Length: 156
Image (tube, rainbow, N blue to C red):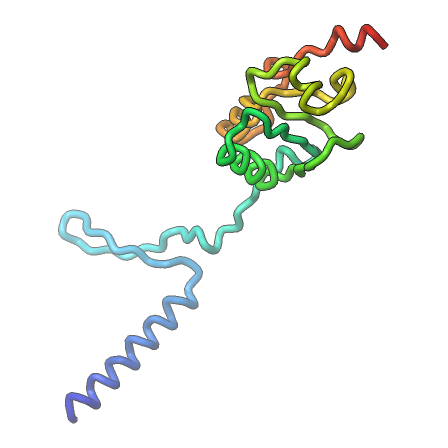
């Protein structure tokens, strides 16, 4: 038998072996323990269904761009959507949160939004809240991150 024909046949065997490997649910791994080789099936992440956490699934957020650098803003928008939330690019009645730069005060917020007073029915939250949620990969209580609009609620 010529070497060319043998290589072709060996190539076909390799192709068949690869095809069998692909049909198997789990890839095999080979390990050596005490000089003895063993082959066992290992989990394959590509066939394990991944579940996307959607802890922002019921939220529609407006992020005030003032004071938040572009790259950070882009990360916020991408991550909010990744975790099931929606970004609004304008103020609307159906917002669940207004996200602001951490050091902003209510007067500046009103000037930037061209409002007489801040919205009292939508929580105004510091951007570190988003960072905390992303880091912990879960919804975090807004209590420690909310700007106090109580004085405006009393003015009704």
